[in-house]
Length: 527
Image 1 (cartoon, rainbow, N blue to C red):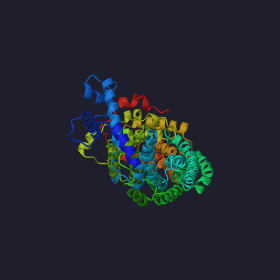
Image 2 (image 1 turned 90 degrees about the vertical axis):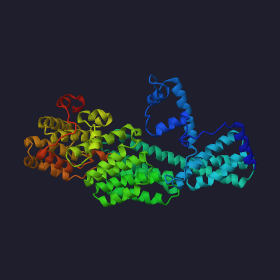
Image 3 (image 1 turned 135 degrees about the vertical axis):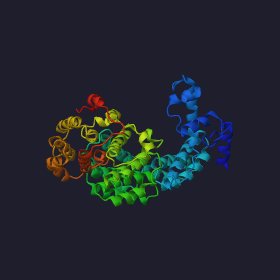
Image 4 (image 1 turned 90 degrees about the horizontal axis):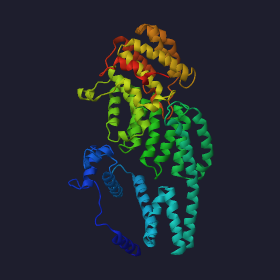
């Protein structure tokens, strides 16, 4: 009862006239509710839009009254967050526990600060059991520290105090190992953020890190520590294009985490998505489709992981040559309200996918309804301006960007420009790609394209002239690392077939590139 009385005292003394929970009153004329509804419907997308809507057409996001209104709205929105419904299918038991334990540990801290030690004790006691069950290391440390204090100074019980003392020491050691593993993982993935080129040296780093972490993983049964260990193990195989090894690591990780109470759906999705790509690269498409179905409901719609899942699904459909299904996956991702919230690098990856899709439309391999065609404003001449980071990735994403543009020119039957592009590609390959290294398939494909001019843009002669380079290319498997599978999203063998089709019949862009634009746009100059 002491705990209840402390809480009643605090709430009564500090309560507001009303608790405002946004998003629960559709009929409200309250300005906060109106703002909530407009944002939810996607009708306001910038602070400038919102300032003009509420305060007049001459205002912008820096207008003082708008900033004050926005800050107050933000505070109410944070308060509302604590009332979200955890019983919906989006949350499994572990995710519900994450939310509840974090909320409770914050409440314990605030209750202690206000002197409500009995209420803090009761909440801490109720929360530490699920925290231990779900292996929430930081939360265990916080709660155990308070309970150690309580059983030392308030209700002295040396046995219980010693129990919490041991819990603190164990979890501090686990936390130290986990932070080490986390730092190692971010060291490994940092080089991939703006460059999708192959990085086989990452494998040696990852192998060394795994050796350092192995004693900790064996000593401690820790969910988060093991999670980072498996991420590193996955990257160790994927970075040297060992798809079979990557499949084995991902399957082991999924089997391990499926048995853990602490596992949340996003963790399973991360390993599932890499598994999809590796199976795709091995040509095991049916298995990849099974994993796609398994992973469909693992990530909450609109989250980073959800978009990554669609990315892997799109690559699978491209490799299967189910191009109509590719379009459906692309549309599902890019039409989502959260798409514009993706990081710049992630949006650039989808821009490259868009270029592939537009090429497939030009080739007649994707058929769109009239209303969808009208929405399309893709222009090859503007393409490189929309992907500034990838355009600088000389051994990575710049490769498909330049190849796609050459393919467009072939379909337009603008052979002089196509030849200029191919010469530039050859020069590019000489500078940035090397025969025999991890970019060898790209090197061979560019050399094959070069033979088209030598064959006077005739299909049969082009096939004969390019045969040697295509044979060399075929002898080397597609080499996708963990992140940069976009480099050859459509296998070069398939692109070559499309190039031959283009020579046979040509095609039309929905909005043809102006010849002057293509010739003078500085972004289309290959360095």
